[in-house]
Image (tube, rainbow, N blue to C red; front, side, top):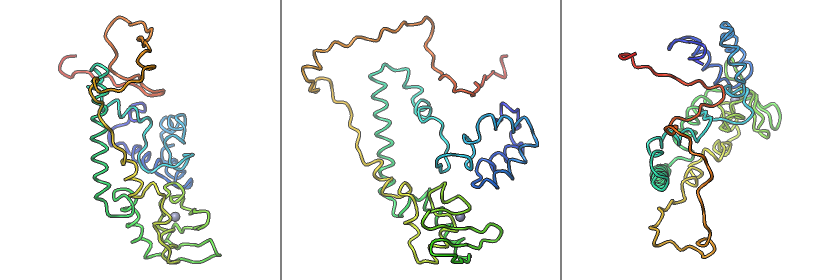
Length: 263
Ligand SMILES: [Zn+2]
């Protein structure tokens, strides 16, 4: 957006964009997007890109904080030097990388003593527990509660797992209003958090081990596999150097870097 709309590094429009993208409710979104509409070109660009692609409020699914368009891009970037190696060595590099990642993350999860992952759900929930202690809860019926929170009260439905602020539905982590109701009802607030935030799920994700490929002499190959002849694909090798840079996605522009000294 910065490049396409020619915005400067500290342009206020970028701040408005961040606020709009992170809004949970439609009312909050509309309020911030109105400020973006002051620059018609920026608003048009964002609308054409598709509101659901960048706005939390318009998104069809669920999202925490990180927006990744393509996980392959991240792996590609890490392996940018290894990609130049012959394929057997490249696979070796990928195995080493995954072993390192799995070990680091497994050890972190093992050291964790909280119910939820400390840097994600736990910290947020503890802050919300503090906020919720200052709120009043009014029981409307057996399942609905109104939580008085200054300007933005929350209407909580405990059976539907929803709150009018929409944080609970989108994050699957109790918002401060739901935390207040849990306190009011003497319910365990952790039971309302998605299992994806829990330390156990974190540990499960990295519980498997990745083993290195043994030397070829130790391989046990069944006869029917050994007898198959596998030829390289019938691909025409084009002249010139092989492409190292990835092909940009739809709507993505490439950056051309120029040397400032030798133009
Ligand atoms: Zn809420």
